[in-house]
Length: 237
Image (cartoon, rainbow, N blue to C red; front, side, top):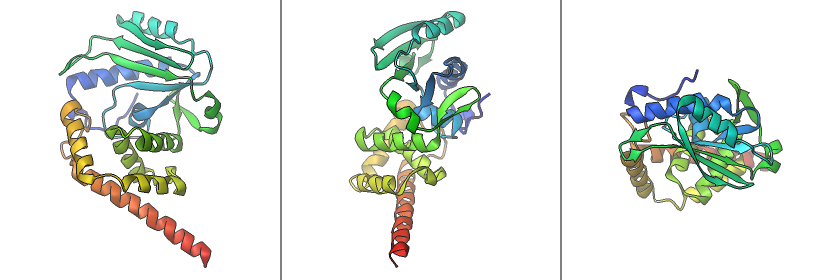
C-alpha cells in the first residue's frame, strides 16, 4: 500500500516490523484525525529517514478514540496502555511484541486537540483514505519545531523539505530559518546527527554523511535567501 523512499534492505528487523504496524493502523483512524510529523513525511512525501511514532491532530474537541484503538489492539492480539488522556492530549502506548536493540519497543500514538481552531487554515488532503497535512503545513510545523525544540530529527526533516519542496516555505519562513541556522555550529549539528544515527539507526542509507548533509542544507538555505534578495532588489528598481 505504501511505497517508502528508503532502502528497506537497510532496515533493522524491529524497524521493518514497526513500519508494518504503523501501516496497518493508519487507515483505521477515520476522518476526524490528521496525520502529521515525520511519519506523515515518510509515508506520503518520500522522507528518507525512519520514523517510529504516530502523531495526529484531532478535528474535534472530544477525541473519543480510546475504544477504537483498543478494538484495533484486540483484533491483532496487542496490548495497550494509556499514558495521558486530557481534553488536549491523548497518548497511548501499544505493545505489539516489538523488541529493539534497547529492549521492549512499544508504539507511541499521540493525538493533539490543541490545533482545532487552526485546522481550517492548515490545508490537508486525503491519501489512501488517510487525512494528511499538505507539505506546506508540515513544513511550517517542522520550521516551528526547528526554532523552538531544537530536535535533531526536525532539523533533518526541514533540510529534506527545503531540498525537495522548496516552495513549501514562504520567504518570511526562510528568513527565520536563516536567522536560526546562523546560530548553529555546523560541526556540532553533524555530531548530533551522527549520534542520532548511532543510537537509533534513524537515517536509512549506507552513504549518509552527517557533515555533508548539514553543509548541503546550509547551501540550500543560502540559495533561497539569494533568491529573496534578488526579488526584493528587482521590485525596488
